[in-house]
Image (tube, rainbow, N blue to C red; front, side):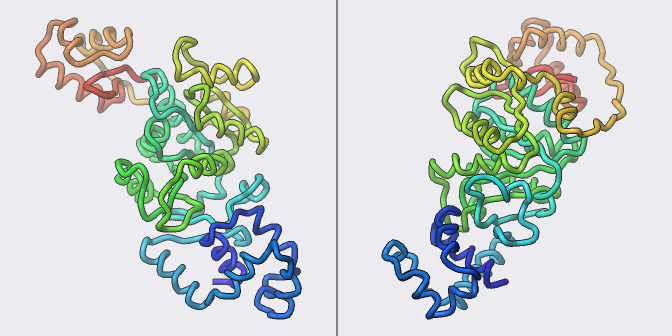
Length: 361
């Protein structure tokens, strides 16, 4: 590990922000000066640097390097720092970029063309359907998807990308040694196993705190060429991600929603303020990002009379298994077999509480 990379990791372990480190490094001409006793004392005589000065002078950097390498090896991680050659170019110019990124999986994805997709943790049926459709089409066109691995839209983004054999990046708000939420640990493993990537600016052992989710969002938006927002409340973390995207001069794409739905207050508000963000087709995103859409050969899906009737019932929206049985007057066993087949062909999806809805094709 190069000395300058080790120093940046040390700052990260000690909890220093990029802006604080920038102020410290402005006092020296080269990283090696930090290890020259005379130059170090001359550069940091000012009392405002006393906390840094005392910590740095007490550190045994050989032991610290051993600790870092053990942390990385134990959890099968790698690390790239702000001065590393493979640090993502997309993050170099954002405000307060992460000093260090801890990675698990395919780090080459950091410099591939990507689209960030975010939204509410409690999507409506409409939001789920739209997120699946957009994610799959954008992924099939060669874009890496980026999200946060939280419940709701983040989870749908990862799962939908994997369904079509795409690559996804999940940015976490805590150390990669413990996935949060823990229920998504299996999904995180699938992401890595299928050539995707887990990313965090937080070292192992750090549990996610509320402010870290907000900090995480600037990385989510920063890694994408643009940001697509599916559903978001008026005051939500998603809205801070939108703000970061605008500050980073990213393309912003917003899905319009039901004007009576709390999950669409934020997104509809953004469209009202910035009408050009209005997005109802993945083709608009691909066009604006100058990505050529890949034509995929669609398999003809044959449906029988009962399956046609099921689809007709689902035109009304999300409906429970029992209600479908009652409306069509068919047995539970027959309906179950039909729904299993229709799920396999991507015609319907099962939601929460044994509810079913029709997918967009």
